[in-house]
Length: 214
Image (cartoon, rainbow, N blue to C red):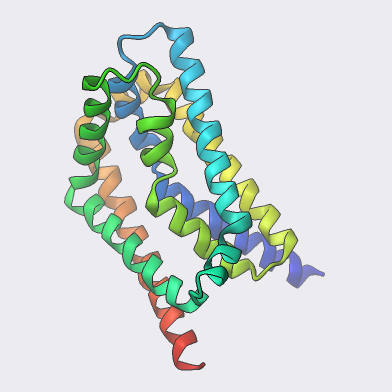
């Protein structure tokens, strides 16, 4: 019983850390401000809540049906681990090199220039919170659960927790931007990028080992 509890706790911690690093909630603060600066405070809170809800639904859906989708497409979990690990490593490289913040800010600016009145779906939910990297990480974590309903419930709980942190970061965006500043956000992104790179390499190693052992 204790071993199961520790394994479940380890899985939840791994799921939460992986998703938190990929989504990078506190990095959303300046982008959220850029996308909603001209809106009233109440409207901004509503947009933040809906964006986090959309992101949660997308990632929870990926956790529940992602493995079946891979099976329907004839993609082995080992192959997806390698592909997902490479994708996460690419995102980690952008974070370490300082390219991700600039790219995400550019997407938010483009949405404003195209007169998107409600940025909850784009660019906040997709691709900032529930982008390709977050979806890939969710699928990898769901595959690690191997159909165990208890572990899948923990994964969805981790997704919900990350979404709540994103909501808090958006609501406190002004204070976070003032506290971190441009340099602080860049340093945080680089540190999280190194951690994500290590996680990505581990996924690739696990996938390669699974392929080699048949």
